[in-house]
Amino acid sequence: MIYLWDHPMVTAVSRMDPRAQRTRCSAWATTRGWPIVEVLVDDALAIPDGTRPALEQLRAAVQEQQCEVVVIPALASLGPQVVDVLALLEILARHGVDLVSLHEAFDTTTAYGSFAMLVVRALAQIAQGSELVPSSVAPASAPAAALLATPTVRAERRSNLPFGYLQTASGIVIDSARAPIVRRIFLLRDAGATVPELVQLLRAQGGGRWNQRTVAAVLAHEDAYRGGPHPDGGRWPTLLERC
Image (cartoon, rainbow, N blue to C red; front, side, top):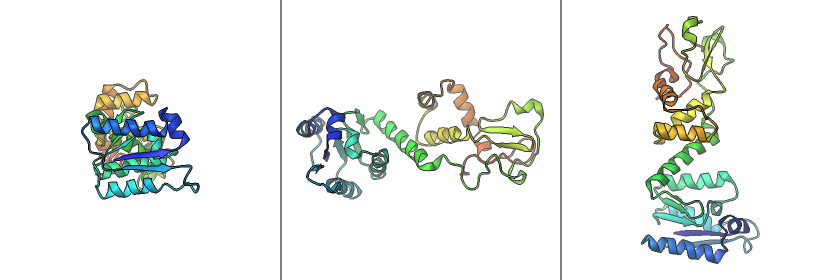
């Protein structure tokens, strides 16, 4: 199935006029041997109220599994807002429908594209607030009862705290600056990212000091992050939701 949004923004992003967009999407499907079930088009000028009936038809077709692949000229075709794009990507993934976006060379029928989709979905969850501390997790300012039962840790062991925790006078607490990074690592790990891929993703987001050893060290402390027992007694503050 091909979807086109006849809008100046898509023309600018894809560097193709609407006719060229349709031609190229059709040619791409043909070269892959994919039958074109339907070509859905929303004309921005013909629909002044801003509604996109063809996009709604696409959503319905995906949910009813009327197609296996959706081909678009650019991700901008899905909407002007990132949240719109992420929402439709989530629908496609949930129903097992692949996406090919020609401008970005985004193709989830390939192994690389499939992994990219997993990462995008994981980042979408982060953007929607999944990196926030669950209600059951105590923030750094929580009362002492919510902290690690052992009020102090021997000085020689403080430097060995897992990434994401801080030592305070009252005990060990969650580091609010680093905890979101820990949650992101595990979210991407659960989405299928390998340690080398996690390193690349973290570095791409500005974490130049990350390497396979430091990422592996974070993953190795999963039990602590999930509120497991501390070797000195008590339990670690729960940074990740328990399985």
